[in-house]
Structure formats: C-alpha cells, structure tokens
Length: 459
Image (cartoon, rainbow, N blue to C red; front, side):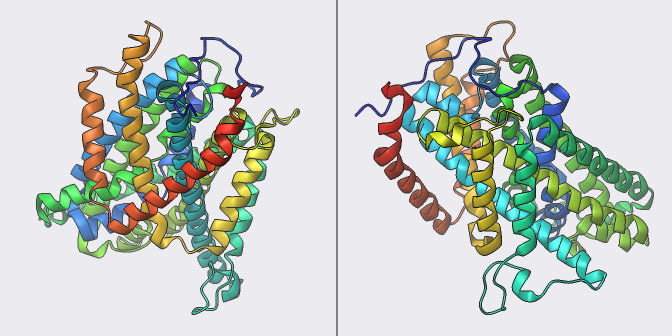
C-alpha cells in the first residue's frame, strides 16, 4: 500500500473546480480579520493581563505575532504556488504525500469543529445575557450544553446560530462574506471608538509595574494569546474562489495578520492604562473598562459589538471548514457526496451542511471547556508541518518565480518557526497530548479503512 503517493502540482491558471471566482484582496483580508479578531480582543486581553503578564501583555502579543508571522509567510508561499482549495491539507498532500495530507486535513477538521462550537457557545452566552436583561431569558434546560448537575440539556441558541450561519454560507462565498465584511467594519468602528475615547482617560501609573509576573509571565502570556491570532489560515482555503490567488491570497494572509496585531497592541495599551491590570479578570474587559471610566453608553455599544464579533468568526470558520471538507472529498478521502457543488450558488452545499450540523451538535450538547486546548496543539502541529513543507517545496520545485510570494531566508525562518511552535506545544498538559494522539489514531484508522481505497489517485 502506497501511503506516500502525491497529488500533482496544479498548473497556474488550471481550472480545478466548479467554485465561482468572486473574491479579491480586500475580501480575503476581511475574511481573515473576521476569523482572527474575535474573543481574543474582547475577552483574552483582560484575562491574560490580570493573570499572566500585566501591562507587559503588549510584549506577549508581539512575541505571539512574530511566531504567527513565521507560519503566515510559509502559508503565503504555498498559497501562491499551490492555489487550490483545502489550504494546508492540499499543500501537504502535494509535498509529502497522501497520508501526511490526510492527517493534516484530519487535524484541521478538528481545529475548525472545536473553534466553531466554542464560538457558538460564547455567542450564546452573550445573547442569553441580553435576553435576561430584557426579561426574556430561556429556561436553564435550553441555556447550556448537557450537564445534569445544573439541569441544562442543550444550548439552543448555539445550535440555531450555527445552523443559521451554515445556511448563509451555502448561499455562496460572496453573499456570506458580504455580511462578514459589513460586520467586520462595524466591529472595527467600535474598537476605534474604544481607543479614541479611552486614550483621554489613560493613567500612565496603571502601567507600573510593567511586568509584574516577570519574563516568565510575558512568555506564558505569549503562549496564551498565541491562539488569539488563529484564523489567518482560513484565507488559504479560499484560493479557488479568488480571481488572482497567486497575488491576492498572500496579501490576504499577511494583511489580516498585520492589522490584527496592531489592533491587539493598541487595545491592550489603552485597556491596561484605563484599569489597574489586577481588576481585568472579567469576561468583558473592554466594555468593563468603559464602565470603569463612566462611559456606560459606549460600554453597551461594545457589548453589542462583541456579539457581532463572534458571529464574524463563526462565518469565517464555517466557510473554511466547508471548503476543507469539499477539497478532501473531491480527492476521494471522504465520501464523494460531500464535494457536490450547488448549481445556483456555486458553493459546496453538502460539505457546508455537514460542517454546520456537526458543529451544531458539538455546540449544543458537548461541554467544550476541557477540549479547548486541543485546538491549540492541533494548530501548532499543522504549522510545524507547513514550515517543513516549505523546505521540501524548494527542494522539489525550486525557487518561486517573480509573480509568486517568496519566504525569505529559507531554511532558517521555517526552522525557526518549527522551533517556536514546538516550544509552545511543550507548554501544554499531558491530557491534551493524549487527546491529540487519540485523534491522530482515529484519523489513521479511517484512512486505512476508507480513504486509501477510495482515493482518486487509485484511478
């Protein structure tokens, strides 16, 4: 059995699918920002400042951003040289062969499913709080995932929002991303409002001590907030729906990550300047900071913005997961029905519906708190393989041409990316490593039992 057979490198301009090419650079930047700028800026900033790094959290964000930039550069070169749907799955399939490609795809499915479910649960929490405030709160049985001790059985709002977003994404990339783009603009307007108003209330003494937990706290903070940047890789899954993927996909990846980094640093500076860091261990630190300085109306607006923020993440992640399932199915490693494209919307309808239903079940019934770190280790492993793939890509296919994106300082930067990701992985607990190993074993068994025999490379 040949587990290392490779998918041929696609030719530039080659028609590889029935998906409609509608997207441009700005669509991709906003897609990336929709996925990246979510709970990180509205939730993680406060928790990380209070418990891990203090005002030095801005340094933690710089370190985390640096590690993500290393991975983003590798994604950008792959996206310009292998412009097909599926992102990292398709890149690794082309470079390291079918088994490695399948396992990366399997890891990415886990990443997207857990991200979707957790975001839907978070969105449900905000909406339930809003409904409580106007006297229309749902009964406890319908407010959270199954927990007999508390009397909860299903998170109804999480299920409904997941299915609703999936229906929207089925309508086609342009329609789904049009709503995403609108909400990203609203979200950025509220973030700008926070910074512009907050800067007049900043007290520099709140930045002292700057690093109350020492350098260890700064590094731990980087490991914690690293995951606030995840989502830029969803841009690479849109390659087959982009008018000029060689140019636009790398710009979308680098552009969205760069803008998100500036936002995180700006918001953290103002946040820790407004409120003593020890008081920021709250679920809504940005809104809390506005209430702290007496700006209750702006605090309310930001709370609404947080709800919109989580919705954009759900749209972006559902979009990326559906395109990933479509690409894997098209190669025969998942059932062929999942690669069917709707004649009207030119979108992978069955893949999107499957992504939505599974995400809805997870969000509605399964408590995800203990599984959250699994997303982290899965993503870091994918980043390691992508970095190694750049070195192999150069060995097999040489240097990129003038129109393609080029990672500088190969192999030094990819090796550095691998080292940084490994360092962050070893910070995770043994239980997370065991869950990671179990997921890989299930994926390998599925490939041997189904994927290898149904692969299109058998033809």
